[in-house]
Image 1 (tube, rainbow, N blue to C red):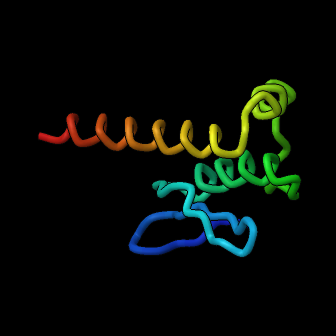
Image 2 (image 1 turned 30 degrees about the horizontal axis):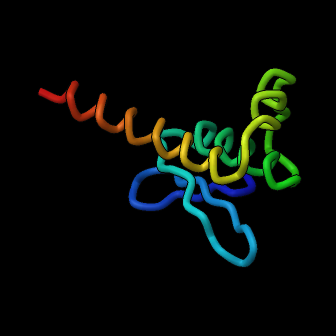
Length: 88
């Protein structure tokens, strides 16, 4: 799948923009990573791995690239914090 690779026992999502590799996030499944790449690809006018819903497309069209990255990183950080809190 485009924008997805396996490293350190996790699936990574990344996209190249203006000759810079941008790490999007780390996931436990290939599909999760691919779906995040797809959202970034849509923002950059690139081909996704899966078809995005019309609702997702509408939401993404309302965001700037910087806003998308900030929101994505915030969600990943919050998800990571929740997982840490659940550990015994």
